[in-house]
Length: 168
Image (tube, rainbow, N blue to C red; front, top):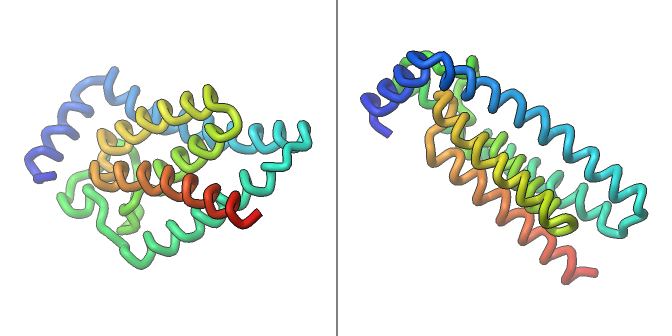
C-alpha cells in the first residue's frame, strides 16, 4: 500500500460519520462477540461431553502462542507508523502488525467451530471478513496483515486437527 492510498482511505473514513462509526463499532463489537462466542462454544462442548473439547482448546491455544511468538520476532511496522498518519481505530502499538492477531484469532476460532457446527463456523468466518475490512479501513493493519492472519488461522486449525486426528 502506498502512502497516498492509505491517506486517501483514512480521509474517506474520517469524512463520513457513518463509515467512521461502522469501522469503529464493527471492530469493537465483533472482537467482543467472537471472544464471547468461543467460551460459549467450549461450554456447549463440555455440556454435551463432546470428546473434541480438548482439541477445541489446544488447537487454537497452541496456534495462538506460535503466531504470537512469530509476530514478536517479525515485528512488522503498522501502517500508521510507516505513513506517520493517525489511524481511525485508536492504537499506539509499535510493530507487531504481521500477521493480524485479531484476524488470526477469529479465523482459527471460526475454523475450529466449523468442525463441530458448520453453520456457526461460517457465520464466524463472515464476521472475520467484516473485521478484517474494519482493521484495514481503521488504519491499524495493511491488507497483507489481515490476509495472512486469516490464512494462518485456517491453516493452523486444519493442520492442528489433522495432526491430532492422526495421532489418536
